[in-house]
Image (cartoon, rainbow, N blue to C red; front, side, top):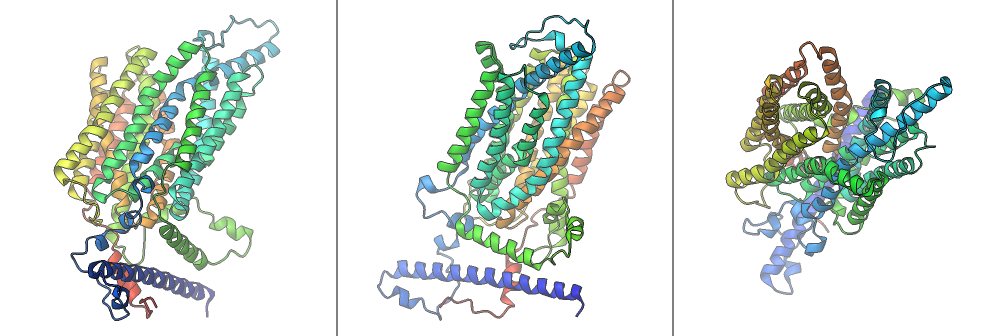
Length: 581
């Protein structure tokens, strides 16, 4: 037999074995549930004997407890303090996002001080007669360091930091997402905190001993943060946790709460950090507080938060992973291993094959992921451009920029925790915990298209605004588009089995990490090439990108989802003894 045919045949056999195990496990579960229902209804001591091998496996329609979906059934018997819920995660996640937002400005200022010190030292060693006005590194504004030479070095350093963290995060995000399907969400959330804590420790050392600290060591902190996934993985795993314990028709609201935490942290965190520096006069105090927040997050998640994935679901995911791994032909040598190394392999989940899938399912996943990546990439690519542009066009300084960011993010948070939940409740009604997944519905599609339309309108307003008040109004209009990202993430989870949620969101994390690297580079390059000529070119390009996403969104088809019944039918075709003995 040809070796390739042998590999294919072995893979088919292993897939059939996996289907057989899954089918047997499902029928065993249904059998036990039917047995329990009949036992509770009869109340007799002989109830166990009544549910024998000849008893029907189908459960009566009136047995509501037996009809619960698996994600609800896994935890329905547990007390409230052991039952997973997004409310367990929201509070610590909000604190972590405050820390994430609060560290941005102090860390940039610290890097500015360190680079300025290095520049002065180098100039003095090269030019013995070099004299520079005394610089106050104790938290002052340090206008002496705001010269083109230092600014250029800081820009290059931040670029290297973003590249290192972004590329490493692109490698680790899908792997950590897939691991969360097999070993639980809590472990991965805790793991992401280790990199952030290590990075904060390095930053504290730098802020404590700035005179002797080599600035390049901060790049190690960026690397550690990227290796553990950074905030991208934290968001993905938090959304996976919400998926495990939220009905499909309410996931967009749950995801919206996490996005609201992110935007609130970006808006409020810098203000809190600035006040702390102003009161204490020491920037290092901010980093100590942020370190304490991350340690608290890690301890609270590990000790207090219930795991959202049951042991059975974790074991099932591990078995499927082992089956797929065994089906692959082993590499003959290290050269073959290097050839088989494909960093984009996690994206295969966006093109699933086998029982339960369809061309429409694959098409929806690709289109949804494309729109989601465009929205994230434009958001990341426009952050610095907006600040630089408003400084050039309107003369905005720190106060005006902070006011603008506060207004825009407040509007975005209002839409996420006010408009989206209310609209979802009015249109979909109360959460139905027994409702089955039916894919993306018309409400999801309407929210996505409205969000992208407002994003397009807002960025077009940026290009046309010639007064700062109109620019702020455009920002508030674009903020309505904030409801699009959580709805897109929710829609994506409705297209895959529950045991692949982490893997799917890890793959989107890979796309986000790549967008985090590519988008800022492209849009900053456009701004650099057109500033002073037609400075608004970058916003025209951003609006056109959103317009393209709006057009693509019309190719999403409603009510497309992974068909569990097709998997059951495929498994039923295998001769097995499904009735437990």
